[in-house]
Length: 514
Image (cartoon, rainbow, N blue to C red):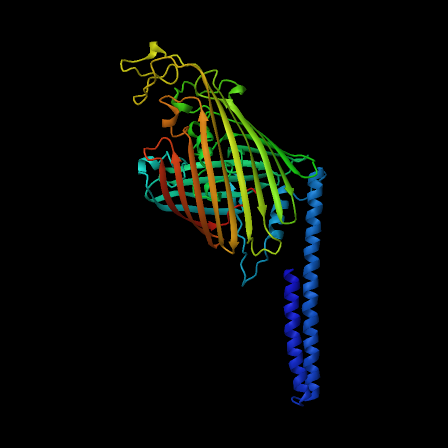
């Protein structure tokens, strides 16, 4: 396309000059002989330029053919000893796909590379995304921080909040793996959010991820906060998957089934004892205020297991529908018999007309519904380990924590059931602008220690959140959001909050999952 456009411009310029030469000849100045000489030179120059473009096109086609042959030999395992190595093939692929470099036009897509401990490292996408929010609420900071605003990267106080700054490094490691790492910076310091490898050449529609990663449960949990449409984390996700989102070291196998529509099944196994990152499982804080007495992995049954099945259909040329269902199962920290099952379903409906301008207008509607069955084990105080203040260690053989006061009476086993949903609709009504609304509910059954209505992570709660979004460019975003909350655990049942969030993106951030 770029060669054709350049050729058209040259043709138009030479055509215009030709008309001027003919006009000069028609009025007799300069002489007719000189006009014919000028016309001949013009024709020769045009033919020469066309010949150069034709040769460049042929050379590019030859390079592409050679790369396709090398790729086919590598896949079939028939590459000869003298053939191009996978590393050389990757370098040539990068050179071929990158825009041409000239003295006056540097490459528009930077490619960074280097060697770490003798291993080639290639980073094709490097970015920093910063989120900061300002706002006010009728609730106090104590009620906002960790209670109404339970997400770890939510705005949590009156005034200003640095939600996060995320440094992302993503790129091809070699022809077989893609590497991805995300480091978060906030007022609490720096933390590694994700670091994993993804295979890129397995047969039969298979793909493997391994490392520290967000669990692919639902629609929002696998996304980083800056990829959310709304400013804060959905209430049901904060309660069931944790304030930091559910993430842990492990492995995930994906299988793209041979069905006639897009249908993918995910199987995953991860550590269940990552504290606040696995809040419903082997965490230091058990659900419902119950004592946490266990956090170790003793057998494969103590791992956290995932299964997810998602399907996508193009309903029309402008409308697509994604439907998913998933389940999580693993141990919890209340005892040997403590188990947790989380399951739910979700869908996303997206409309975008074919004659859109850079993605606008659009309409997006998505919903997630989730339920948790938390089987809490019977608790018997280990009186022989108690000190004079009635404190008990969480784990046998450990001294009691000075801040840890556990119940001195037995607590019967119980099943704590929690359920919730959110549904949100966003309409991009003109280029750069969008508006929407989100409705949420969370509640449950089974008593917490001290009563479920007083438990901010289990009491009944409603929230409605209108939203207005402005994208000045692809690298910045402003969001104005209003929250109306009704929650049992608050002294004032109704709370009004307004947030203004600003996002700035530096560099090339990798595309997120649909």
